Length: 247
Figure 1 (cartoon, rainbow, N blue to C red):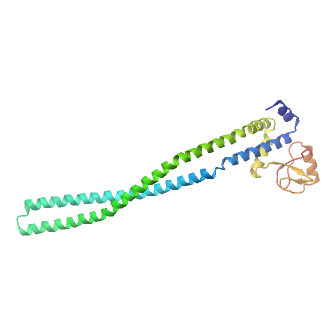
Figure 2 (cartoon, rainbow, N blue to C red):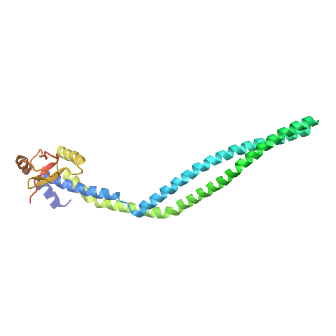
């Protein structure tokens, strides 16, 4: 802070300094608000990335479901094939007459039909599995292709935010200096009012009207506010601190 600014800080009254604090707060609020104003390109890229991620997640969930079905059916198919092979081996060893041959053939036929059912159930699942894997691979490719452009846009936005914060550094330093020369109770009161009154905690009045809410102030309120003494005078309508500014 310059020597001139320091001198002005000490020469001005507490409400004038508080009014300056509010001006700095409004500027910092503006800069903070601008931080959230991302470019249309970045917003579109983030949206696209989110959509790809959602589609990929849905695809992978569906793929996992199909994989589980396939694993279960493959186990059943393998078990049935083993039973067919085992019964055929027993048929060769133990079917010593026509009746036993017929019994083994009946069991083998039932098991073979079960094998066919499993194979028929697996065929469309293999097709679906392949399609889902291809879809997932394609979505990962889209995500990878988008990454460089998105990274560049994110980097530019980060630089923009840092620049905005750098712009506010002088205001933050000046505010800290002003606050250091004000009563803590006054600062706390101002900040409480400001939080509840859309960022405006102290206002001037012109032609007897509060510039915060527009109400016509009683003469005695105007006279007390004009003195600039503490505790501060507040608007009886909106509750903001009043200050009489020099014209």
